Image (cartoon, rainbow, N blue to C red; front, side):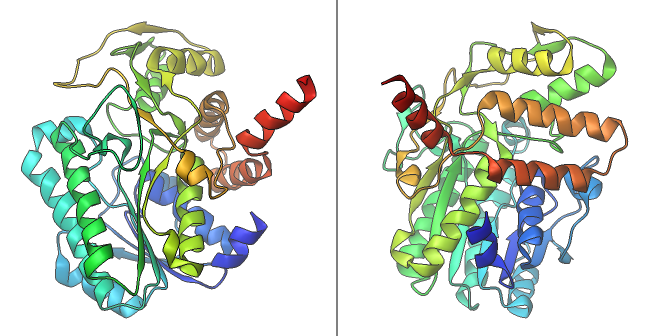
Amino acid sequence: MTDLFSFYRGKRVFVTGHTGFKGGWLCRLLALAGAEVCGYAQDPAEPSFFRLCGFTGEDVRGDVRDHPRLSEAVRQFRPQLAFHLAAQPLVAEGFRFPRETFEVNVMGTVNFLEALRASPVRSAVVVTTDKVYAEEGKACREGDPLDGFDPYANSKSCADLISGCYARCLLQGTAVSRMRAGNSLGGGDYAAGRILPDCVRAAERGEPVRVRDPRSVRPYQHVLEAVSAYLQLAAMQYEDPRLAGSYNVAPLCGTSTGELAGLFCAAWGCSWRQGGEPLPHEAAALYLEGSKLRGLGVLPRWSVRQAVEKTVEWEKARLAGRDLRAVTDAQIEEYFSSPPQGCAINAARRDTE
């Protein structure tokens, strides 16, 4: 934590999607590090992490489809590092509004990368998703074919490929990486159709949690696993551009949705049952192979149980009217104080030998 925060202290960092769930957690880490942040995004949906925890930095409202406005925001701020998180992030919305999904996720990414061409940015991260891969039901590696099945997934596959093209051909002075993270859990996520936000809403109403398919498996992890990985890789490639590329951000193993619901109910004190409207297409299992990033020393710190428990802790603090920025900061400090899971596993093995 000390080394990472030391790197970002005083750095100028541009973030699209800062009013979103992941963007909010990323910007909070940057604020604690003492970075100068400019966020570019549309107004947040309510409730939102952004409203509940606040934002420290330059707050620019705009649509990533608005190329002139986005380019002007980057030009005026003159960032050293940039993170692209703005997106239409929901599978169900992709089926309902496919054209808008492709416009935001594909052309929004093009506009972001175009804006970087006239900027002094040395390091950039484009955030995509675990769903970019063509194959389902296997542990996908970074070199596997990209061709997401549904409009959301496919739009992110396109964004990933476009980012690779810009990195090769048009942004030689900027180290650009594409980071494909598994499903993020944490306080302040209220998107419809995501498992833990649905669990929180049901628990608040005193209703049983409903799970569409308890057998489906996903690479669930706490949001801090993802955003800290973005920050670590961006810092490393800032110093050594040869590290830029594509990276999976993944837990050590997948978790079934039923197991996740069980962990939530045990932590909150409620029950779950199978039910809910199915999506037009939902993969039975998604896995990511994350050894490439772990080989750089970027290791997961919290188990899925800890991720769920920290989400419950955050949401119960919200219901109790506590200072959520303080709760968030305490969780960040606890996360970075936790030993990396790989180190903990190796230590346990040595103890039993």
